[in-house]
Length: 200
Image 1 (tube, rainbow, N blue to C red):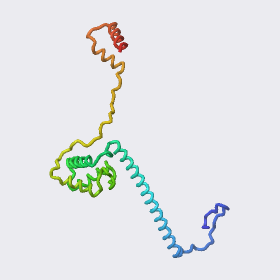
Image 2 (image 1 turned 180 degrees about the vertical axis):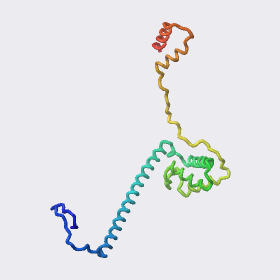
Image 3 (image 1 turned 30 degrees about the vertical axis):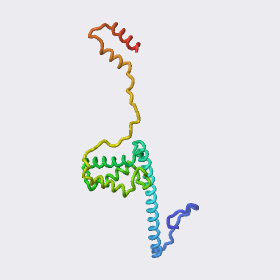
Image 4 (image 1 turned 90 degrees about the vertical axis):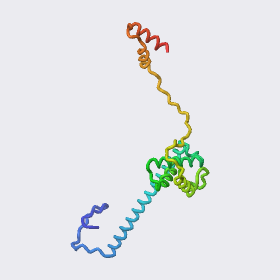
C-alpha cells in the first residue's frame, strides 16, 4: 500500500518506511507500455465496431425509407422501357443543369440507385450493373440526344380531392350585403339578412 493511501476495509493509512523510492524495473516499464498499447487498441477496435454497427443500422433505415418512397412514387412498378425513359430524361436534365459530360455517367447511376434502389442481377424490371452502365454510356454518347427537360415519369393521380372549407355565416352575410342598394333602412336590412340566412 502506498504512502498516504487509506485501506477501505480497516481505515489504516499507509506510512513510508523512510527509504528512497525504488527505480521502476525495465520489465515493469515494458509491460506497462505494452499493456497500455493493448488497451488502446482494444478501445479503438471497439469504437470501430460500434461505428460499423451504427453505419449498418443507418444504411438499413435509409434503404427502408427509399423502398417506401419508391412505393409511393410508383418507381417500383417501372418496367425496363420506363426506366430507360427515366435515364434519358435525367440525362437531359443534368445536361441542362451544367453537369459536364464526363461526370454524367456517375451522376446518372447515383440518381438511378437513389430512385430504384440497389441493382440486382435477378431484377426482371432492371439490368445487371454492367449492362446498366452500358445503357447509360449509350444514352450519353447518343448524338441524337436532344438537350431539354421533358416531363418526368410520374405515377397516376390517386384521386385525392382537396375541398374548400365551408363558407362561414359572416362570409355569407358580407356576400349578401354587397348586393344591397345604396340606401336602405335598418329594418329592411335585418329583414333581408334574416330571410336569406335562415332560408339557406
